[in-house]
Image 1 (cartoon, rainbow, N blue to C red):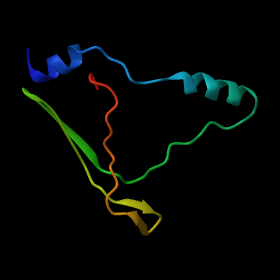
Image 2 (image 1 turned 120 degrees about the vertical axis):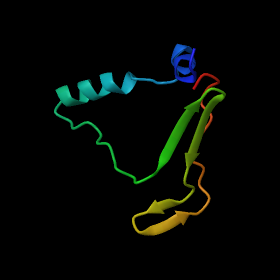
Image 3 (image 1 turned 180 degrees about the horizontal axis):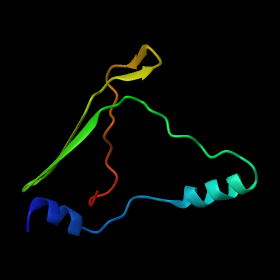
Image 4 (image 1 turned 90 degrees about the horizontal axis):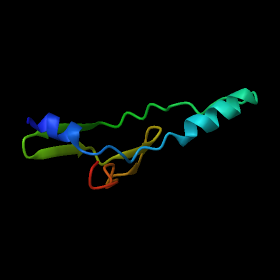
Length: 81
């Protein structure tokens, strides 16, 4: 199998959609659900026969101010993610 097929065949997990139920309840009560924010962060990934490589920038901003020049944006979640 190709690298992509191997990645897709691994057990899925690590994502929690419990907030979707919360958002429906809030909307039913007249509340607005949280909005997605555009942050401008660039993260990319490449799948190859030996695994996956992820890359990201390390700068964190608050508006036009650089708040952190060495911010880790890729975090370990689980062995299959």
